[in-house]
Length: 432
Image 1 (spheres, rainbow, N blue to C red):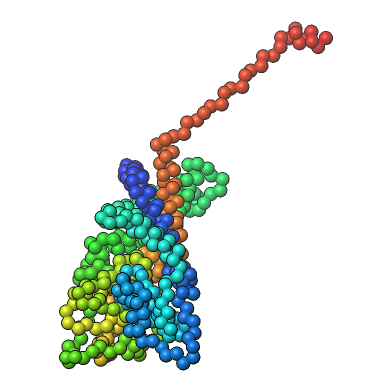
Image 2: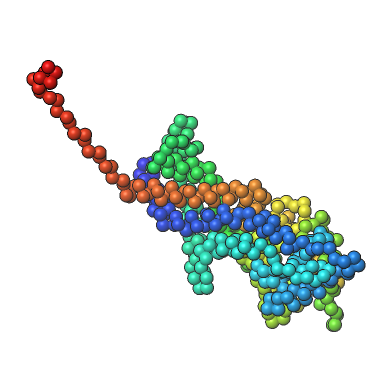
C-alpha cells in the first residue's frame, strides 16, 4: 500500500475509533450480554409455563374464556395475541401488548405472571442500552441516532483496519505476530498484539453484525437490499410484515367461529408444530397494536424482534392471521403465516419463507444474522464472542492511542558513587 495512503487511513482509523469507541464498547458488551436471551428466558421461565394436571374430568376452557381470564387479571391491558403449544402440560400464553404476557391454565383458568423477572429486567436494560443508550422520551431518537452512526463508524473501522493490517509480505514469519497471541509481552507490544489478533479473527463476524445492524437501523439501507435484488421496497420496514388478507363479506348477523375452531383449522394445515400464535385484532376505535420493533423482547412463539404488526386501519372483515412455527424448518427462523376466514374457518392463504421474494429473504436473513439466531446456538455463540472481542478492540485501541499521545517519560537511575582507591603508600603502611 502507498505509504501516504496508509498514513491517511491510519489517522482516520485512529480518530474515528477515539470518537465512537465508548459507544461501540457499550453496544458490543450489551450485544454479547443478550446473545442467549431466548434460551436463558425459556430455561428460567420453565416453571411458570408448566400447567399442573387438573382434576380428572375437568373440561378444557375455550380460548375466549382464557382471554377473558387474562383481561380480568389485567384490566388495564389489552390482549394482543394468544399462543398455544401441543404439550398438554403447557400454559396458554396471552400477549398483552408490547413485550408483556401472562400464562393461563387451560383447565383451571389460573392466571400466572411470567417468571424470571430478574432476567427479563436485566435483558430489557441491556437492550435499551444497545439500541439507544437507555435514553427515554424525546431523547430516545437522539440515542438511536448515536448508536446508528457509531455502528456505521465501526463498520468503517473494520474495513480500514483490514487495509492497515494487510502484510507487505505474505509469509508465516511476518504474519505470525498478528495471527495469534504471544506470551510475555507487556505494554504497547501486548496491546498491539491483542488488537491485531482479535481484529483479525473477529473481523468477518463484526462486518456481518455491523452491516446487518445498519440495515435494521436505517430505512434507506433496508430499501437498498430490495433494490439490489430487483424488488420493490415494502411500505413497512420490518421484514416479516404482511398485508392483512380480506375475506368475503358474510351474511348480516353472521358471527365469527370460536377461536378453538379456527385454531383447529390451522392445525390441520400444519405439519409437526411447536407453537401457533394468533394475533388479535384491536377493539373498534383502539387502533392497531403496532408491531414490536426489531430487537424488542420477544413473545412466546415468535423469534425475538420479528415484527408482526396489527391489522389496525384495514377496512372490512379481515382474515385471522396465525403464525405457525414447525419443528422441522429451514431456515431456523422460518415461520408460516396462515390466514383463515374467521366466519367459515376456511384457510385463505398460507405464506411460507419460500414464498418471499429475494429481497425479503435477504432482509430476513440479515435480521437474524445480526443476533446469530440464523444458525442456532452456535451462531449466537460466535456473535457473542465477536462482540466481546470488540470490547477488547476498543480497550487496546484507546491504550495504544494513549501511549502515542502521552508518551511515558523514562526516569534514569542515579549513577552509583565512585570509591577512590587508597594511595599506594598508605596501603603499604596498613599492610605492614
